[in-house]
Amino acid sequence: MKSKEKELFISHLFEAPIDRVFKAWTDPEKLKYWYAPDGCTIEYKSIEVKEGGRFHYTIHHPLHGSAWVAGVYLEIQPPEKLVFTIHLSDEKGNAVAPSAEWPGEILTTVTFESIGNKTKATIHEAVSEEEAKKTGAYQGWIEMFNKLNRLLVIGD
Image (cartoon, rainbow, N blue to C red; front, side, top):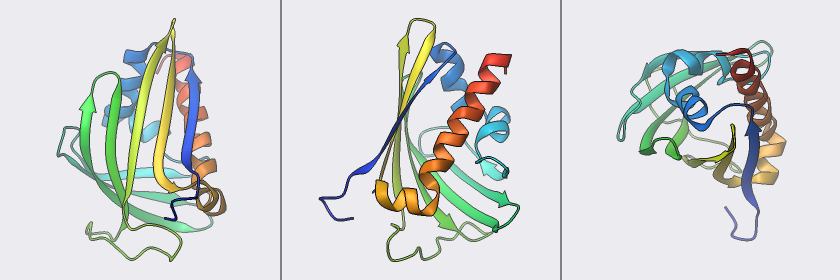
């Protein structure tokens, strides 16, 4: 990525305490209900939420088909921080070549901050915000944050 390009940063204020929000990011049973953009579903082939743990899933989109993704949890600091990598993969988890504008592996950092009974979550991805908006990745995060907030409000 060109150093002049703005990287992706998105913050969201969740209507739930930090422990519940963090758990929703690290509990495989909760992730399957919100960790996919609107109209899509997610299916985990594997997930091991621990430092050095790996995940592998597919997102099913009704118009664009399925996309496989894999990654590794690099840092887990309950309930304040998650750091993981993600990359496009095949069904076996092998990395596949991205487009020229999109990096092969993306470092993702999510931080959580208590604000009363609410939680501010901020996601930072080492990708161009402009490219993330073109590909739909930016909007996908907004949709997933909104889905998670609805689940937390109704009492996940």
